[in-house]
Length: 221
Image 1 (tube, one colour):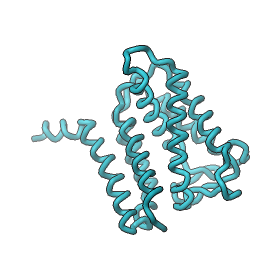
Image 2 (cartoon, rainbow, N blue to C red):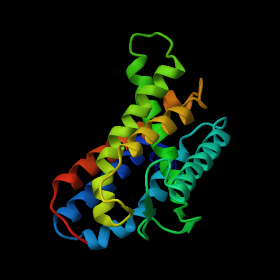
Image 3 (cartoon, helix red, strand yellow):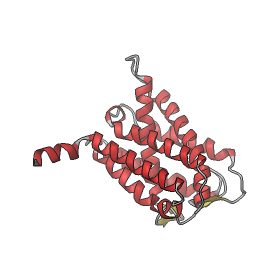
């Protein structure tokens, strides 16, 4: 019995199901009018997602992931402090504790989205068996991330996660997202996790479906 439980716990499909169920419950709860109870749990959800994905990364990768989180957080700090990268914006209280006016979890979010988008790009580009150019992979991954950001933005504004001071979302936000994602992606060359960590790719799909749902559903906090 203990062996069976251990095997179940170590099975990535088990944790893939956990990720799907968490977001399915979240979207359903929002649809039923419980956004005020569920959306404040977003920081906890990000921590759980990060823990699940991190548990299935390889031993050679932690330094790359730590650097990615640090640089992603740094880009956000510069953006908030200067308004010159993404535009003039500020974070609310909905994404957890902040340092230098930026939620610490933003570095984690950058890492999750980069890993997931690069995994999906690797799978899409390597279907014919050819070696994938890191530049092509980074470009496709950056495009995926920018599209996802376009889905996140309306939800984040409604939820109060961040505010654009000029009202409309500036085009520089999406340009900077793409450039930053492309640049950070080039830090990763032939990284095995990009090919094998399927949970990161699944999470990207789950995030996309979740934010599509929250864009379509009527809800208020």
